[in-house]
Picture (spheres, rainbow, N blue to C red):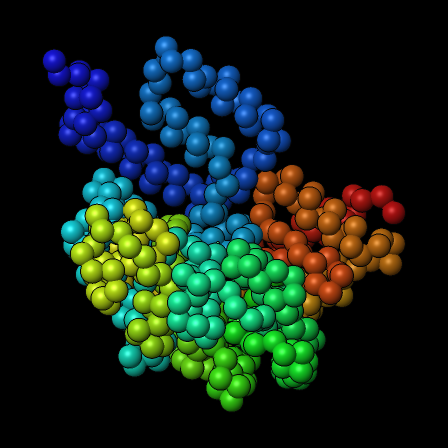
Length: 477
Ligand SMILES: Cc1ncc(COP(=O)(O)O)c(C=O)c1O
């Protein structure tokens, strides 16, 4: 007997009806968020949030809810990235068309591990990764898409290990002691990837940064020599473009030359800043990236797509096949051949989202100018904000911005600076009017903004500054 419930869940007209309602709600939401008619966030303590959901929509197996009511509650109780006062973490303020593409890929749900389970998406992944390779300056490059910068960095370092240590490390394991040199300001996922790979404390060498929080090349040289003297093999050097806390892009050209001279794998974590390749105005910041062996660029940071989709690009085509070699007879007939179209051979994921499609739709609909305009707008705005900070005697800038990340702190003779800035950030968060974060640089707490929203402007910056000054006045000495 046919199940009425299954019929209802898959009924095209029910889908259409829900779809129209959801799009109506989302476009109203977009309007309100973009016009700052909603708070950026309505913060609730974790236990209160849990309480709301348990009370309002208890899972008791008897009650059936209207999905539209649930949608509305989720919107109401989420952080709103489309509000121009959102200046927090590096998560894309999504282009609405890319969000709509999520519906398409969600419904089609092609599995992607093998070509047959995602023919269009596999071809689109090849086209988009090769397009990105060309933008980067890789003439013979190849790439894959994977679920996030963290996984992409791990995949790249596994490829580096497989190439630099010995071909079959995947089957024979680690042989002599190897180390990886990386800036002390690199994102924690690089450290995590290396620990997963078994490098341990001693295998991860953190290179000190200069006054602008970029890897100090003299320190790199020194550390390299120390490791060689101790008999360690240097497997790879990782550059950040930029590092997360400050947005500072390292001297990629300098690191690239060093790697070439020493025959080390050069990996660039350009998860945040890689999109600058689209900008003739700012792409000079990435000079040298074209010499890297592997590069990571998150589309869900600076390329306006919903999470989660990351480009992992290799300068040498064959390196993108280095990472995994594994028997999976039920998936592909030949384990060792380099077939571009069976992506599961090169990715951690077996089932993988049709992620390239979201970027492809934006690229084909608006052209690459969209990404150029976005990068220019955000980087320009951040320089404008830095200027406002420098004009105000109460504030100190950590360093001039390279990208759209800016760190600054409030200084007052009446307060210890670290607790003052921690307190400012917490009080600001509690207002729900702005969302900014904080970071610690060389022991000092700084307020940190990432200007992700294209609608953020000078007025938002001035209001943020006034709000901070108002909050400081309310603090007891
Ligand atoms: C430089 C850098 N690398 C990697 C990551 C991690 O990327 P994902 O969140 O996509 O895993 C981040 C996240 O902020 C980052 O800033």
